[in-house]
Image 1 (cartoon, protein in one colour):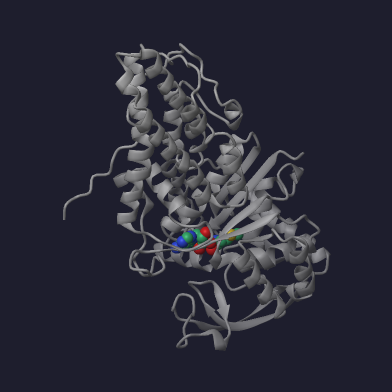
Image 2 (image 1 turned 180 degrees about the vertical axis):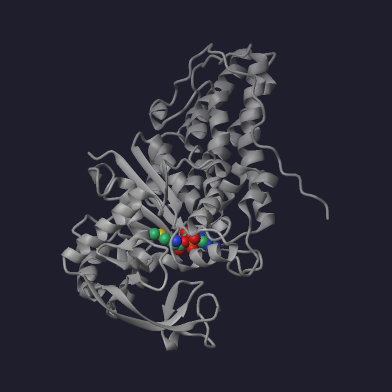
Length: 506
Ligand code: ME8
């Protein structure tokens, strides 16, 4: 059985600071990567930056620096998202790295050798900021339909990829690989688009030179997609290493804005180059600002993840983004909903539960794990919640239902709170210390499930909770036995993990 799991984010354009949308996509991948690590899989989780193109060259020119200096500087902000959000990416690829230039050129050569690349002339309405050509009909008031920015008529020599040869092949491919495009709604959209027939795509430019040179024709640089998409292969070791350890990738997670490129161009290129296709492209939705408009730099309504983390906390932001919407759907960032969720899920439900039980147990049982007596029917009914919990969470995660996975866990967090209230261990402190200890111990057994399974979503807090129970690190293997804590083992005096967010009075 192949025990590896390779997951990727898009490589982001470092033409501005990362915003909440970038953080969100990497966060979703991080949760999936972390869950697969808990299962004991060999995980490769990659993110990075897409550093070529005319837009980057223009920005650098404006600042009178080289494009390389510009991207070296801008990349830093994307790299610091990793510590800010506690991402666990194993690699961070930049397309200006040597290893990537080699990979993109090798990909080009394979496509050329297989007869899928030819030279012709390209013309159309070009928008520099979108790095895209539009047809006359697509323009809105004579401007780019995507950004509203001006367009100019351009004609140039260009190489083309014979995408038109893939209409039927792709339809057959989607049919044979029903999980390739997820969720279903995106799959249907892509299939109806492909059914209309595909046209060849332009894959080189000669009007600027900030890109990977086209092999054998130094006047041209690659234009966007062969360069950008091949990054996923570069990370897997293409073309120099044996890529079979991690390729084909398990999942490329991308926003709906770039679904077509990943669901159409990418499998077509891979089929053409005779390289296996990834198992899934998962298409997620967009976050909009509180005013309901798409977050974008030009509208000036972007939410800055650095500010939110500094003000409210990292796990708080992670949990809100992952649980507030169905993965795949759109979301609107609401400050009130964010605060409400942080306080109820983290401070009250989970944080208070651990703090109350563990500090009471620590104080009254000499800092040692109390003994377990005979399990009552109530204890058994409560513990039954945790039997199979890891499998239920796994089923949701394997199905990319991140918010449902979180709900599975919080159903059990709530059950633990209910059990604690109903059993009220503190009332037996004097008259029946053994019973008091027994109830605390039952709760502590349930805690290892919670500390372990919340890790993919709130890794910093979850690691502290695991430490409080005396574990250095928990994995799903630690959850095989319902009862497994060691009586009499010392544990540290707990400290509160999730602070309540105080709502400022206006
Ligand atoms: O498209 N909500 O880079 P990019 C949610 N370089 N996610 C969002 C978002 C929002 N409001 N805004 C951006 C590119 N994203 C290319 C990709 S891949 C081979 C090349 C996320 O910087 C989302 O995942 O424009 C989207 O697909 C991605 O950022 C686009 O990043």
